[in-house]
Structures are given as C-alpha cells and as structure tokens.
Image (cartoon, rainbow, N blue to C red; front, side, top):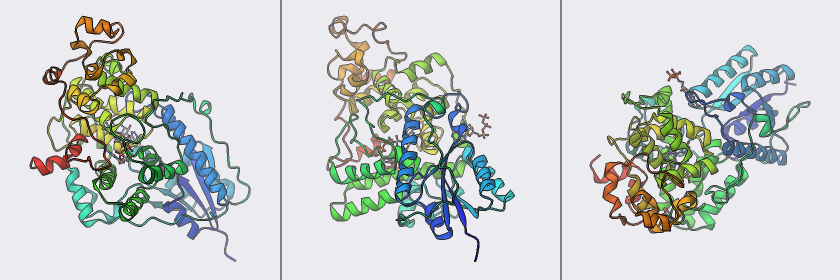
Length: 512
Ligand SMILES: Cc1cc2nc3c(=O)[nH]c(=O)nc-3n(C[C@H](O)[C@H](O)[C@H](O)COP(=O)(O)OP(=O)(O)OC[C@H]3O[C@@H](n4cnc5c(N)ncnc54)[C@H](O)[C@@H]3O)c2cc1C
Ligand SMILES: Nc1ncnc2c1ncn2[C@@H]1O[C@H](COP(=O)(O)OP(=O)(O)OP(=O)(O)O)[C@@H](O)[C@H]1O
C-alpha cells in the first residue's frame, strides 16, 4: 500500500473555501489536508518608510473574524484551520519535522516583494525537505495565464486599453466547486489558539455607529453581503450608509470572496432580473482591481518607489505638520477632514473620498505620496497592496493616469458629492451649526454667520491650511451641479465614469 499523502494548504489572502484552487487541488491529490493560517509577525511591525503600524485595528479585527469563520466552516466539513503565530516558513518547517512526512505545500501566489520573499523562503524549506511546492494564481477575475498579452511586459499602461483587451479576448474561468467534506487532518496536530488583539500588541477598535462599513470579516459574511447587495436591496446614493457601493473590497482583499464568484452572480442576476450599466459597473470596478495587480506584476517594486512607474522626479515634501493635519482631519478643509476622520474612526472611506484626500495630499500640499499610501496601509480595512499603491501612484500622477496633472477641486467635489453638507456635518461635528453646502467653506462666512453657527475659526475648527486658487470659482456659486448619483438603477450617466477618475469617459469624449 502506498504511503498516505499529506498536503499543507497555506492560506494567505484567500480565506475562503469556495472557488479556492488550493483546496480544490489538495482534495484531489491528498489523503490528509492541513489547512494552515499563520499570523506573521512581520505584518504587525511598522510600514517601510514612515513606520506606521502595518496592520491597524480595523483590518486586524476583520482578519480575526475571517480566520474564525474559516475555522468554523472547515469544522462543519470535517476539518479545521490550524492557526499559528509565526513566520510561515518557520511554521511550515516545524510541521514538516513534526509530521515526518509531508507530500506537498500548496498556496496562492502573491505579487509584492514582501510576499514573494516569504514564497522564496517556503520553497527553500520545502526543497531542503523534499516536499513538493504547488502554487496557484487565484486573486483576480481574469487569470494571469489567460491575459491576451504574450508577456506581462505587454500589459498596457492605460486602464482602458487593458479593459478592452481582456473584455474582447479574455475569458473568466468558471468558479471551482466547494468541497462538501474536506479531507481530514493527520492525527496529533493541535489546531492552535486564534490570537487576541492583546497578543498581537493591539487594542480592539470601538464601533462607530456612523460607519459606512459596519460589517464583519469572513466568507460567510461576504456571501451574505453579496446576496443582500445584488438581490435584496436598491442602492442609495451619496457617501453615507452601507449601500452606496458594494463594500466588497475588505472581503476581496483577504480573499473571503472570489471575484469570479461575484462575476458569476452578476451574470445570474442579469439573466434573472436585468442587465444594466450598474451590473456592468461592478465588473468594470473589479477590472480596476485586476489591473492594479497586473501592474504590480509588471512593475514589481517600482510601484513602491517615490518616482513611480514613470520615474518622474517631483520634489515631494515631508512636512510633518502638514501631514499631521491631513491624517488627523484638521486641515480646515471640511470635505478632506470629514473623510480623514471617517477613515481614522472606521477604517473605511469611499472611493470618492480616497481620490480627494489623495489629490489634496499630493497636489495641494505637495507631500510625498508614500506618506499617504502608508497611512492608508495602516488604517484601511480593505488594504490591498496593489490597489492601494497603484491608486496612490495614479493620484500622485506617477502611475497609470493618462492625463497629466489631474487635480481635484475640494470645493467643487464637496458640493458635487455632498451638496447639502450632511456628510461633512456627520464627521465634523464642530461645523454642525452651519446649514447646507456652506459647511464646505466656513472661512468664507461672515462673523455673524459663524457666531450664529457657534463656529470660531482656529478655536473650534481650523482655518484652511491652504486655499487653492481654483476653489474661488465655486465659492460664490455653491450650486456647481447635481449631486453625485449612485450606481445602481437608471440614474447612471457617463459622468459617473468621470467621477471615478476613470479614463473611460475621457477615452470616449476627449480623444484619449
Ligand atoms: C488612494 C486610493 C487608495 C485605495 N486603496 C485601496 C485598497 O487598499 N484596497 C482596495 O480594495 N481598494 C482601494 N482603493 C480603491 C477603491 O477606493 C476601493 O476599492 C473602493 O472604495 C471599495 O469600496 P467598494 O467595495 O464598495 O467598491 P465598489 O465601487 O463597489 O467596487 C467593487 C470592487 O471593485 C474594486 N475597485 C473599485 N474601485 C477600484 C479601484 N480604483 N482600484 C482597485 N479596485 C477597485 C474593489 O475590489 C471593489 O470592492 C483605493 C482608491 C484610492 C483612490
Ligand atoms: N506587501 C507589501 N506591502 C507594502 N510594501 C511592500 C510590500 N512588498 C514590498 N513592499 C515595499 O517594497 C519596497 C522594497 O522595494 P525595494 O527594495 O526596491 O525598495 P528600496 O530599495 O528598499 O526602496 P528605498 O530605496 O526607497 O528604500 C519597500 O518599499 C517595501 O515596503
């Protein structure tokens, strides 16, 4: 009789059972499966340049939930999730020693150099112990091997070209089946405790009832959110509340939900209900996510470099007084401050907000974009290395933006997307007494209006640290246009592509 085959399935940013090729492969090639998750101490140190905590409390809570949920799911299917605190390469090495015989290690590949470094170490350990290494690509909608370019070097530097190429010539692979029962663990393994906040040197965050992302981590919650968003709800507009956008990003970042599964559900919705621009919209956005991952594959560490993909030399500042005002939401520009406070208090910020605060940091304050990227890396519940750095590069004008010097006008943006000022008042309570859109420009109000609103500039709320010249166009004419529309339903317009900073609109209208 041949010896039993044991496969370690190392889970990383793929904390799900559905559409997971690691499990799918192991089910076919093992007698025993060891699902393993490692809390890698390197993830709880400082960010690279500015030493902010690398994983903040919101993402940690989401991760702990996701790990607990995967363990519970696996238990229902005859297995469990081994959890260890330690470097994956060391944990895997210990497991191999402990078990005496492991046939293979399977995991999903990542993109960035820190993760690649771990992969290299894992391969070394397996090579020394004659353990096979089986890797997969599984984080994107379109598989890396199905891209219509002969080499990743051929990836276009403009999103629209990428999108058209994959939509025209690519294919989305079908979702892999979910195992009813997962092959059992070998005997004698401790499943290991799931660490606590304290054990990882952190404090559990306090819930904020204003949060636009009050959701918990894990595959179960992700699938429930998808069902709710597609099948049970009509999307609302604006920047307040949970349903103005899908909110899939935190689950996608940890792999609790598969983009192919989302795609499959969209196609089902289109058949059973209706196909419209809103359903396409979600695919369009998922393709941005794909794009930034492939940009990461193409440009490797250049996505982290100050001069970006274009090696563009900009004399970025690192003035910490300006940066601190930005990060703490006390720049005196209410739309920026509201967004930055939302991020600090909830770990989430809308895409609209992210584009604006990034533009403000880089274009208005002239600060090093990596300050912003690392601050986001710390706080975002949905931090995804390629999406975060790719979007920051884009905002800083050193990435994949085909337009030169795109700069957002904070006042116009505030009035377009928070016309009545409700969003600002929600997050900047000092300004609650100011009615309507005036809340975007408190410094332009008369002393009597300010005193009536109980606002004292520089005492209860700061004067703006900067006033960009182009803002004046919108200060005396506060009704700059209709408020931004939601993305579901018939209110969709091409303008929304522009709103998202997406070159689709320009490609159609401005000749890019
Ligand atoms: C400076 C900056 C930093 C960002 N950092 C991150 C990050 O770390 N992680 C992250 O997932 N997204 C990031 N984004 C993209 C975007 O803001 C979020 O994906 C989106 O706000 C998440 O909300 P949602 O899931 O409701 O998105 P929806 O609008 O409902 O979109 C559906 C999905 O498409 C993907 N998506 C949408 N827009 C983008 C985009 N511009 N780039 C990449 N993917 C996109 C996301 O996976 C998202 O969940 C960043 C954007 C900016 C401008
Ligand atoms: N998963 C990740 N998350 C965040 N940053 C990452 C990740 N993987 C790699 N990096 C970043 O990649 C960079 C390492 O690349 P590289 O060695 O080319 O830069 P460097 O030479 O160290 O840069 P510098 O000259 O600015 O110090 C670092 O900025 C590191 O933080």
